[in-house]
Length: 105
Image 1 (cartoon, rainbow, N blue to C red):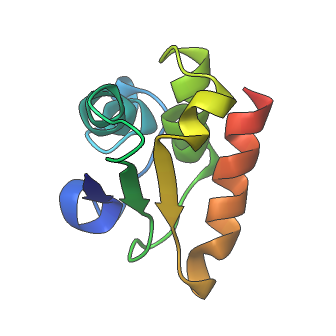
Image 2 (cartoon, rainbow, N blue to C red; image 1 turned 45 degrees about the horizontal axis):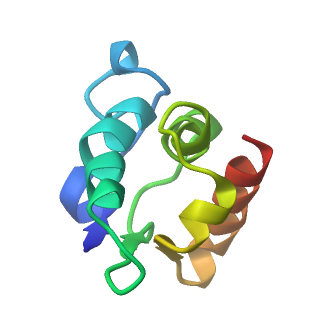
Protein backbone atom coordinates (compact mmCIF):
# COMPACT_ATOMS: atom_id res chain seq x y z
CA UNK A 1 0.00 0.00 0.00
CA UNK A 2 1.25 3.47 -0.89
CA UNK A 3 0.34 6.61 1.05
CA UNK A 4 1.39 10.05 -0.12
CA UNK A 5 0.96 12.53 2.70
CA UNK A 6 0.71 15.45 0.25
CA UNK A 7 -1.76 13.76 -2.10
CA UNK A 8 -3.77 11.50 0.19
CA UNK A 9 -3.84 13.56 3.38
CA UNK A 10 -2.71 17.20 3.18
CA UNK A 11 0.07 19.34 1.76
CA UNK A 12 -0.01 21.33 5.02
CA UNK A 13 -0.08 18.71 7.81
CA UNK A 14 0.07 20.33 11.23
CA UNK A 15 -0.59 19.74 14.88
CA UNK A 16 -0.35 16.81 17.21
CA UNK A 17 -3.91 16.00 18.31
CA UNK A 18 -7.33 15.81 16.66
CA UNK A 19 -8.22 18.96 18.57
CA UNK A 20 -5.43 20.78 16.67
CA UNK A 21 -7.26 20.42 13.35
CA UNK A 22 -8.20 18.14 10.51
CA UNK A 23 -4.62 17.46 9.42
CA UNK A 24 -2.99 16.49 12.71
CA UNK A 25 -0.51 13.72 13.37
CA UNK A 26 -3.06 11.84 15.44
CA UNK A 27 -5.59 11.88 12.57
CA UNK A 28 -2.97 10.71 10.07
CA UNK A 29 -1.90 7.88 12.36
CA UNK A 30 -5.44 6.76 13.20
CA UNK A 31 -7.03 7.13 9.76
CA UNK A 32 -4.13 6.20 7.47
CA UNK A 33 -1.13 4.57 9.13
CA UNK A 34 -2.73 2.17 11.60
CA UNK A 35 -5.33 0.69 9.21
CA UNK A 36 -2.68 0.22 6.51
CA UNK A 37 -0.13 -1.30 8.90
CA UNK A 38 -2.66 -3.69 10.41
CA UNK A 39 -3.29 -5.09 6.92
CA UNK A 40 0.39 -5.18 5.88
CA UNK A 41 2.74 -8.11 5.80
CA UNK A 42 6.34 -8.64 4.67
CA UNK A 43 5.34 -8.92 1.02
CA UNK A 44 2.95 -5.96 1.23
CA UNK A 45 4.76 -3.04 2.87
CA UNK A 46 3.18 0.28 3.73
CA UNK A 47 5.14 2.87 1.78
CA UNK A 48 4.72 6.44 3.00
CA UNK A 49 5.85 9.17 0.63
CA UNK A 50 6.66 12.26 2.70
CA UNK A 51 7.56 14.48 -0.28
CA UNK A 52 5.55 17.44 -1.53
CA UNK A 53 4.31 19.11 1.64
CA UNK A 54 5.09 22.65 2.70
CA UNK A 55 6.91 21.34 5.77
CA UNK A 56 6.48 19.27 8.90
CA UNK A 57 6.23 20.27 12.51
CA UNK A 58 7.83 18.04 15.08
CA UNK A 59 4.49 17.55 16.84
CA UNK A 60 2.90 16.13 13.68
CA UNK A 61 5.77 13.72 13.00
CA UNK A 62 6.17 12.56 16.58
CA UNK A 63 2.47 11.89 17.08
CA UNK A 64 1.99 10.20 13.71
CA UNK A 65 5.08 7.99 13.71
CA UNK A 66 6.27 7.85 17.33
CA UNK A 67 2.65 7.28 18.24
CA UNK A 68 2.70 4.02 16.28
CA UNK A 69 4.89 2.65 19.07
CA UNK A 70 3.47 4.58 22.03
CA UNK A 71 -0.21 4.17 21.19
CA UNK A 72 -0.49 1.87 18.19
CA UNK A 73 0.95 -1.30 19.67
CA UNK A 74 3.87 -1.62 17.27
CA UNK A 75 7.53 -2.09 18.15
CA UNK A 76 10.42 -0.45 16.35
CA UNK A 77 11.44 -3.87 15.03
CA UNK A 78 7.91 -4.66 13.92
CA UNK A 79 7.66 -1.41 11.99
CA UNK A 80 10.91 -2.07 10.15
CA UNK A 81 9.28 -5.07 8.51
CA UNK A 82 6.09 -3.24 7.56
CA UNK A 83 6.84 0.46 7.03
CA UNK A 84 9.03 2.19 4.46
CA UNK A 85 9.44 5.96 4.29
CA UNK A 86 10.18 7.50 0.88
CA UNK A 87 11.88 10.90 0.79
CA UNK A 88 13.82 12.78 -1.84
CA UNK A 89 16.89 14.79 -0.86
CA UNK A 90 14.86 17.85 0.14
CA UNK A 91 12.82 15.79 2.63
CA UNK A 92 15.53 13.38 3.81
CA UNK A 93 15.94 15.24 7.12
CA UNK A 94 12.29 14.50 7.91
CA UNK A 95 12.87 10.81 7.20
CA UNK A 96 15.72 10.82 9.74
CA UNK A 97 13.53 12.61 12.27
CA UNK A 98 10.75 10.04 11.78
CA UNK A 99 13.19 7.17 12.29
CA UNK A 100 14.45 8.79 15.51
CA UNK A 101 10.91 9.30 16.83
CA UNK A 102 10.15 5.63 16.24
CA UNK A 103 13.38 4.62 18.04
CA UNK A 104 12.77 6.96 20.98
CA UNK A 105 9.15 5.88 21.44
